[in-house]
Length: 76
Image (cartoon, rainbow, N blue to C red; front, top):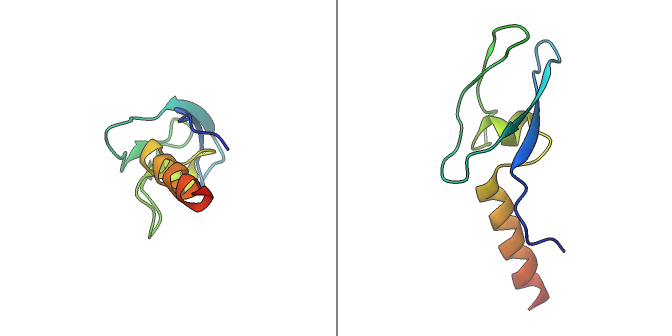
């Protein structure tokens, strides 16, 4: 079980496939991201809190934190 937050996530544009690795904010959700490949403005999918949860290789830090808490509670 990992308890460290991963702050790097690779975003993949669903329109053109362009990929870029970004550092995720730890104190806010990122709702919009301009794709450098095609210029499309990425927005979260329905039910996701941010573009990293929708298009990233790693979910955002707040979601990671929730998963860590759930894992710890499950082990208790």
